[in-house]
Image (cartoon, rainbow, N blue to C red; front, side):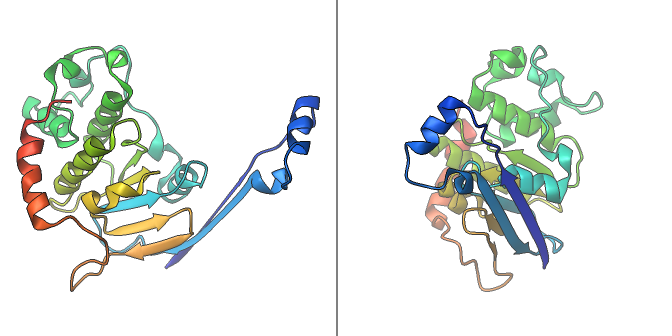
Length: 228
């Protein structure tokens, strides 16, 4: 187990309006502007899928950068270039298609238009597809389901979880939504709201509330046909 500590603090300027706002509430605004996250976690054991979850401002991104490096959440999508053209030059077309459909981006028009014309949700999935093709030891996706409706977010998580359980590939997702947990089926969870770490049991099943086998089976048909 290793200890990770994140301190987030915002400086409040002493201007007329900010002071007026501070005086209008009966609470310690300075205390509310400081957040400390401390958690002990084992991230050295083998895993395929990890999840860092918590509310906005709880330290998810800062924690991920501390663990996986400052560039782990850097955007890789180029706005003027079609998504299909942004994969590595040596990557075969079928592999590009697999990466795109693997994150739920199955609409061919989205592949061939300049990336800046895509919706927020489409760009998030394109970003995820490109990162899966980088060859990084661990792919980190920051808030990639936050810009889509909850049903699509759950389906996306089920699909990418299935994709990353092939071989030794590893991915860590950052999310402010807890409803993705049963669909993602992470091997471990860090909850930035509570400072807790939970690891999936290696035997005897998981403590997590997973969907039923019938729901999982039904997903196969949905994922094969959905156009987003």
